[in-house]
Image (cartoon, rainbow, N blue to C red; front, side, top):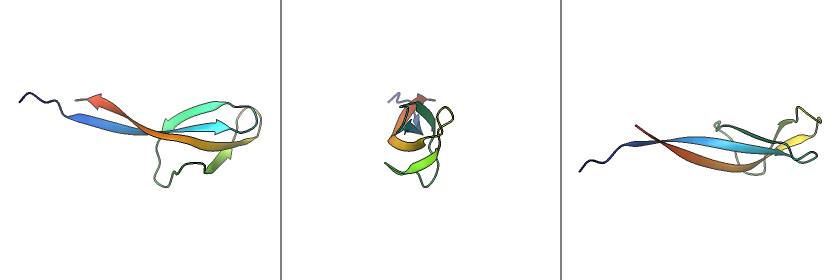
Length: 59
């Protein structure tokens, strides 16, 4: 009866295979698990997508 509409924002978590640095960013079209994405900012290693998830936001 008094339900609140929830909006879900999708996020992607990337991990560096070399130094284990973790970065969270908004999901982009084409992201998929275990894809190698960018170079790591701290060690120049390769970042890999580890998790794709959604966080609800109440409207």
